[in-house]
Amino acid sequence: MKKFILAAFICAALPFAAFNYAQAQQNAGGGNVKKVLTVYYSYSGNTAKTAKQIQKYAGGDIFEIKIKHEYPSKYDNLLDQAKKEIADGFKPVLASKPGNTGNYDIVFVGSPVWWGTIAPAVSAFLSEYDLSGKTVVPFCTHGGGGISRTFDDIKKLCPDAKFLQGKGFNRSNASENEISDWIKSLNLN
Ligand SMILES: Cc1cc2nc3c(=O)[nH]c(=O)nc-3n(C[C@H](O)[C@H](O)[C@H](O)COP(=O)(O)O)c2cc1C
Image (cartoon, rainbow, N blue to C red):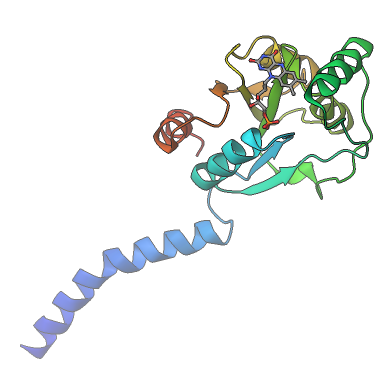
């Protein structure tokens, strides 16, 4: 009888042990879990908020692109300076750099829409970091004008990356459901 109880206990426990072993393997990086990085620039906080929600659902690391120069505090002057920088193809000097983008398989790249394209800080980042061979997922926040040319311009700056369906968000109004449904639809792992 004792032997029977012991055998029944082992049979019941085996699936749990196997599951925990698989989890441990994944946690130790031994599974096929892809390494994710969310990189973003945000001037007034909307893209930062969205990026943090993306990281919440996609996992991995997050990196904020920062630049060395400051923009004028007056909104009209900011618009003028940004317009000129974009027209000139100006690339600001980056104030912070991620350790090693080579470690990542999937890179979410986010920008506010500025004059229909990505902010110069994001152009500077993509010009400096080679994302060839990685899977890139573009996202942006905008003031109602939609994604405009942002995703095309990100693609131009990483021509040898594979792209998944990106998403544009109207300022920071994206609901968490919208973000989590989009992340699920990407089937990242
Ligand atoms: C310089 C500048 C240019 C902008 N150009 C556009 C635009 O072309 N289309 C649009 O829909 N919104 C535009 N916006 C609005 C921003 O894309 C929107 O507010 C965005 O969510 C800001 O993101 P952030 O808070 O992360 O900086 C512009 C904002 C600025 C400051």
